[in-house]
Image (cartoon, rainbow, N blue to C red; front, side):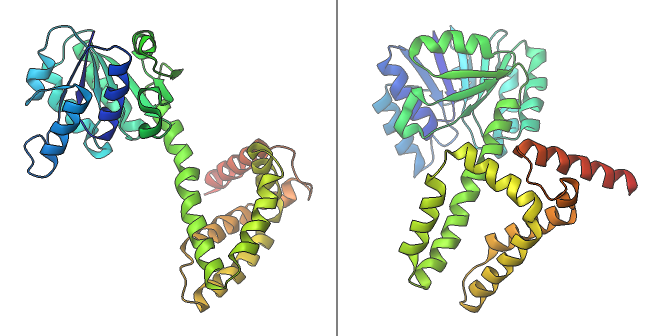
Length: 301
């Protein structure tokens, strides 16, 4: 089985290193930056290290015999454009795996476009650091080509879990997860900057650690969300004090302002009255109430 890559950046390089160690003999790749004066030499060095055969055009890569699988690892904003440029050269029954961080809509658009070529599409989301996991990085996959993708690549030690037959579902999981995983570091930076400014970082970190370490994540998440549903107004007012403190110290309050705005929005939905002042048992109760209130507001408007 021959595996091809379109785009030979860090993702393709790390996957290739691992797959070669697992015994996948033929891996070939094309990257649009091959002739770039700065990045070209790096791509060539990586290919040499990973024992990957480079092709100077996507056409020559896709014309190779026995190419069964194509992993497209390009920037999210280029994913559809690249798929459209490759389309004339794609052969029937090829498995086309898009590992970009594109939106679910883009993944569905690519899948629909490639159907006329008889290509099996896979929306794949890598859920961990590639330099750590390499080819064993946990991957969520959706789309009609997922079963074949799992069947073939699990033989080489890849860790792939099927989400559904619907392209875009795997990307939805990754992007929704990113709201927390990318948002939390931004919030932590704002908190730590203030803590350091006031010289109280050890006390602040210790206090938060005690709270966060007392329960598993899911229990803490549930408590924070359900409690906020009936205390949103009070907590937004408390955050105003934090914001005033930050601004008076010439520190950024961007994340705190966004959190205050979200809390005020929750307060305006009057979920406290809906739940009769009692904290709901599960976070899903809050989200369902949120959706129900929004629907009623939309119907009135």
